[in-house]
Length: 66
Image (cartoon, rainbow, N blue to C red; front, side, top):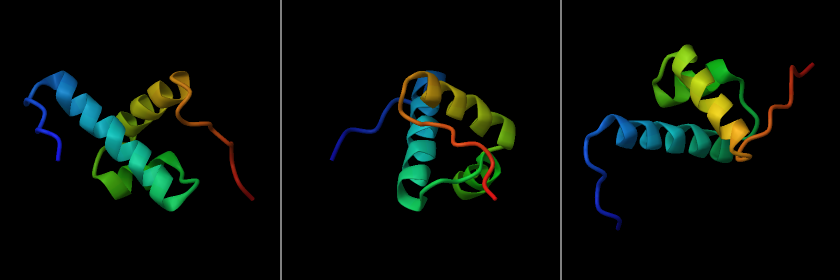
């Protein structure tokens, strides 16, 4: 088991990125609002995190579903 990260803003951001990525990996394609509800963050926070994960090539945005 890995040692817990120190309680810094950067560590919190990494944990939140991990939570978002794990939610999508576990549940398949989700809207940003659905991710926010699952991980307990605001939609604005999730949107920022998702944008970062897309930029880093870890997520792909599919667009609206029908």
